[in-house]
Length: 171
Image (cartoon, rainbow, N blue to C red; front, side, top):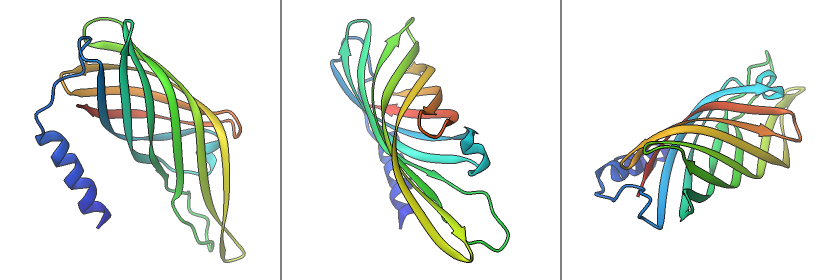
């Protein structure tokens, strides 16, 4: 069911006729698909990450003020004899997307992430929920409704992070 919903959303986003995020447009909404690798302390626990995000953008100055949220899943590394389950992060980030030239941009975001991590101990599945402040610089390119960027997200509490591409569709 979840796979069907995600596929439907992606097809619907691609099929919609929408104006591009231009400097003359004041407000836009974008959906993004993210995937990549964990860094720092995250790399000892997780194998990768993937998720969906939604970004609201409002034109201000030479760029856009942004608000981004979504859900990122983290498959854990396997430990022999211990159960495991996908970790989940729910970030909320505010930032600014500065348009360098016609198609190129750089962006900085700050925010908070709520994370739920599952781990096995003595054959039982346990979980820990925590929140932490995060920062995410990125650089990218945008053509009409399509955008691709390279993001690095840092977790100030756990000294971990993630790096990977974000492919977005702006409406």
